[in-house]
Length: 164
Image (tube, rainbow, N blue to C red; front, top):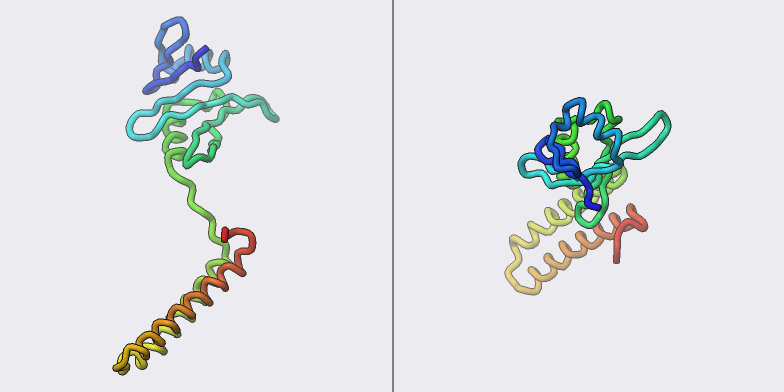
C-alpha cells in the first residue's frame, strides 16, 4: 500500500478524493493516518511526515535523508499541523546542518593562526633579501613547519574527532 501524499496543501486520499489539508476534513484525515509524504511548493524537496506517540499524546515529525544521514524535525501535534508549518519544516530539512565549533577549538585555531602568521612574518625579511634558491627553500620549509605545528595542535585539541 502506497503512503498517502499531500501535494501543494492538497490531500490525495486513497479513494481518489482531493481536499485541503487545512480544513476540518484534513484534520480528521490526519487523525486517521500514521504517516504521509509532503511535497512542498518551490525548490524544497519532499519528505515523510510520521506520527509518534509520546507523553501527552501524538506528535508529528518530518524525516528526510540529507547527505546520507536521516534528519528529524518536530512538526507538532495534529491540531498544530498546517500546510504553512509543513512548508517551514521542508525548508529546514533542505538546509544542511552546520557543524558545531566549540570555544576550545576556536581558541586553539586562533592561537595557531597567530603563530603561523608570526612565523611567516618573521621569515619574510629573510625571504625578501634572499638571493639563492637554497635560502628560499629554507624559508618555505619554515612556513611548512609552522603549518604542521598548527595542524598538530588542532589534532590534540580534537581527540577522536579527526580521521587519520
